Length: 287
Ligand code: ATR
Image (cartoon, rainbow, N blue to C red; front, side, top):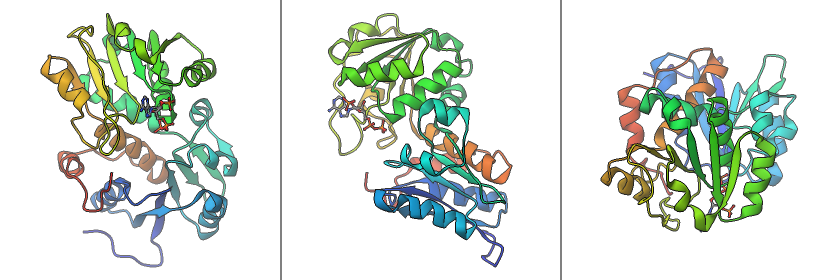
């Protein structure tokens, strides 16, 4: 049973636009109940022109913390009093922590989410970090690359439709990153150890990701950060030819796990009940 609401109940939430499709309220509510934390977590759809008011209003109200999602992950940084090294490197935050004095600290748990999910799925991730092919160069790619670099990836190759975006990303992230044209995404798969899709292609309601995996070694792992559907066409194709596959639902769960720890001081367990609850579409899900 959830702790009943009283005068001490803490408020948390996610700001996005729209935010109604978010699965975060379900995840945090599950943990509030499991750990008997007197808190509620809600989804707030906030348009860009209201972002400043929303964040400052949340601070004024004594909100404990906020997750920040699309399209506000970059813009929210300007309202933070402190931006930690991870959020600075990614250039975006997905978590705001409000301390007792009202200071707002911005961090990013997406990179942790990407890597922890991979780690939990494959065990030792080191062999998969030899040659990583990343499809996409948007915000999700940025978080994935930050996580991969932190985990010790030897060589990262970015293939993105808009080459300039890959070039900017590679410059900003530094390290051992090569850029390939979108048309080259199949030839670069030879001797890849990990393929990650961070584009929106293959997501329910979006265009398909058209890619042949013929060149990809069977020992490589294929990871799609999309979780609607859970088994994307990419993952089905990879699984059918014998590659180990990792779905995107874990990234959602692990980024939430780290945010919860920042807010409540407890690293919550991602147990089988939560995993199975999240694997089913939510009633409100629109994407
Ligand atoms: P997010 O922040 O979730 O990563 P994003 O910044 O909009 O979202 O990035 C979406 C990614 O999907 C980008 O890499 C985008 O490629 P562009 O940089 O060329 O826009 C990629 N993407 C979206 N639609 C695509 C399509 N039809 N073909 C190829 N790539 C596509």
